[in-house]
Length: 229
Length: 235
Ligand SMILES: Nc1ncnc2c1ncn2[C@@H]1O[C@H](COP(=O)(O)OP(=O)(O)O)[C@@H](O)[C@H]1O
Ligand SMILES: [Mg+2]
Image (cartoon, rainbow over all chains, first blue to last red; front, top):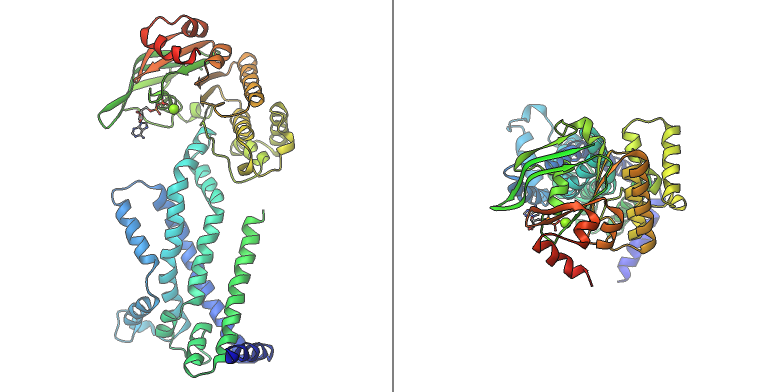
């Protein structure tokens, strides 16, 4: 128990020391996860809405697939991406392995199904109601789409925040495709894992606190922006 | 707008839930639809409002088939209307916004109808936080703000307080008498049908059993099944 508290104190001290490496790690983490969340949102939001509204034969089957992909293990995604972009893989010539680009690709694959799934679910439930309301009030298809997005704004927010939370906190995928290279691909989670395995608990805890604070802040900002009207 | 229904059929599975030879509704009257649960009232209303497709049959609105131009002058309100997650004002202004009215007109028309419904003080309240009677008034104000010619209402005053019922009936009547709007209202309230509607349609098992002047149908029904249905409400 005592060494946990010590860890906390050490951690806060470390943070306040403004050590350069700590901050470049935080910035890289944010860059990688925000980029992948952005790409995933650009794909997942329209795709989820479209799939939710559309009537087609294999909708149930698709739902099941989506749910499976929503909970893909990061390590599996990391492995898959690594195989594809490794030097002998089909995309080997791009030389992406152990770069931030590779980490963005892996996290995008991880997050896109989450955002798509959440949006799909809501658009499936609300889509028909909104379509009808819009029709009875004289709206056309574009009006319906705009209204649906507006009515779903909280769900869209939840989807994006959930996706970002997944991206910033996963370690399996970034570790495999990024390699935790100091000054190049080292992010918060791989930093924590590494320090933990080396017995540097205080350092791990410090970074863990930062991770928590970032999650809290992004949620608050987005929430205020979207729900605060 | 007149409505002409010809050989209308709606089948779910192998059950015909609506089966109507002909039905003519005339502009400027107020119509009531009564009948037991499962009679097909809602289904008929939703088909006429363009929300559902019929299995077979045709409907004419002033001689033409349902199209986008007609739909813009038709509205429908559910028993539990869906209000948008925004203020009462924005809900009511919405139909005017999508019709691209200018800001000033939207503001004026919205304020005016809120006054008519006595909901001016709810203007900036979140619509999804209202009580049943308030929601109903907001939804109806939203449906009427663009002055539709046809108004389809599915049990608009079920489960709401008497004051709201009175107000809603008054507004419907006024719009009908002054602007020639044609309301078609499903109701389980026979007193309401008698006082508000010019003509009443009694439906049972998907068919129109009796159709005539409201007082006559309710007070002196000609068909056995109408009599039986009404006897339950006579108490
Ligand atoms: N989407 C649907 N699928 C299958 N059956 C339906 C559907 N909608 C309505 N029905 C059936 O059609 C019949 C008429 O329903 P409805 O029009 O709601 O009656 P009412 O409004 O007079 O109570 C009922 O037997 C109902 O179960
Ligand atoms: Mg009904």
